[in-house]
Length: 114
Length: 114
DNA sequence: TGAATATATAAGCAAATAGTTATATGATTA
DNA sequence: TAATCATATAACTATTTGCTTATATATTCA
Image (cartoon, rainbow over all chains, first blue to last red; front, top):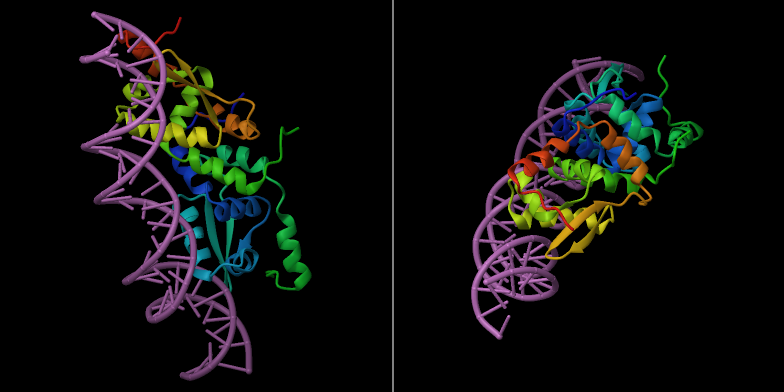
């Protein structure tokens, strides 16, 4: 029994966003834990504006949501999204990315919020 | 139990191709039956070169395969593809597109091969 | 309050994309 | 064999994309 039957055009828009290595990896990371912008900057070794722009695209169609915590803005995945079942099916097949955040922890650059 | 763990970069490339309404619909159609170029031209009301170019992209990464039958070239999905499990998971959620070919049958423009 | 930090946004640019028209190729048919 | 049909490819173009640098905004901290 399948979770949803999706509109093919909207599904295409979701897949288009996921069809980028950076955003796809971001989504896989966010599927297991929330993460702030500066952590992504470090993980992907990309400029802060570039990371922000990728996150904006994901946020614009509400696949992710932001939450300010002090000076940081944390992003988390929106599991209530109409197309989250589609996203989840894809992310399930991807290799675990938790090592990326573990590395930051080891280096002491993981942002932990009280 | 999941079928595969895929490489995130290759998965991104697949999703990028599927992130186009025309190609995504083509794949959904081809997942249930093979189809020739001129049928796609009619279904999508797009130019023949445009259809050919979409098919070429799908063929280049071997998501589909071609088979000449007389003057027509039929395309079918490649279920042996390393990433077909990923593709299948996505296509499963999409609305059935068989009505599109049924319409051609009704109009008598469906190509049937002996 | 002023400096530092984190993030977002704007503007610009090169590369990629998806369509177009024109033409080439290959099979069928008269 | 010449005309026709189906498809592919090439060349061109407008749009989109993903990055860059520069700057604006919001928060924290001294």
